[in-house]
Length: 144
Image (cartoon, rainbow, N blue to C red; front, top):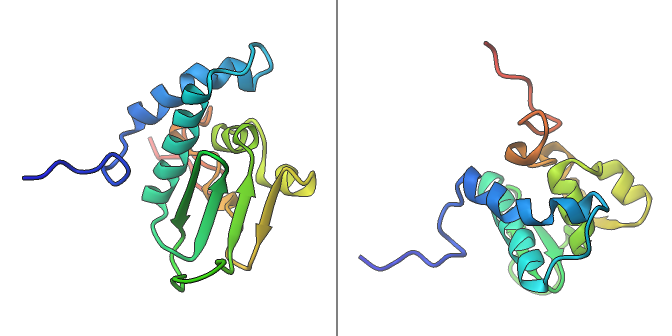
């Protein structure tokens, strides 16, 4: 049986947290920017994790130069510039993914651009394994 390429295999929550942990102090303003390889791994892992949680091809999330993924159910995009695009830098993306920044703040401040009627990622952020409460904004608390 052939090995599953790293970009398509499921990313466990503990692997997601392990990729982000080395950049947390930097995101909090308590450390220098980590090496590009560490930063890139955190960005790629978080974006791919979100794409596996919200599969689809109607929105393209771009965090140059690290990653571009397609996600969110809906009409599939196949050629040219997608109609629904979210683009931001690595620091902003990681702050969104970890809950240090809200979607509304990022868009209002111009730190994230979102074009198209499906390009609102707020229901999916922060990524639940990375948020202090263990859930994203649109998710209800677990009973019990």
